[in-house]
Length: 192
Image (cartoon, rainbow, N blue to C red; front, side, top):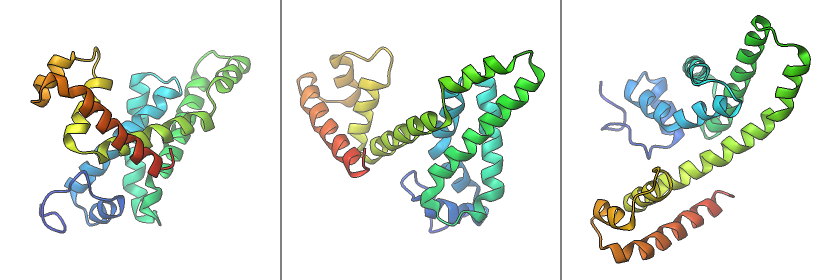
């Protein structure tokens, strides 16, 4: 399939551009759009305390709903907020369905609902999405360094990090400081 505007969809494409391409039945743009928001969608059911299997079910339902309703989205810049709302609604619906079939009394369901409110979960997810977008916006080397130092478990040693980045081990501290400064600036620009 030939993608719009020449070439494959880039992760840097705006939501507007991805949505427009999806509406023209561009399957690669659809994959790029799902790839951009898969962590956001999947994280919400996990935060609601659903199992991984249930989170996968919610993910599929949200993607199907997005596919069927994408044409009605007036402002693609609101897509993350729309996805959070749809995903939380899907989580609540699945929880209600499961409660009908489980031997759980109303008191237990009420306590579960008090523990994690929808508003709390959505606020957390919104912040996480802002951080994901800010990390995505930094230079590739900074992105890789941030991933190595903060997302790998256990984090690699400075020597291993330097080897992977192909830089001197003594420069990792300076590079980290510069990358975190750029990330902080990007987060501040996004109102974080």
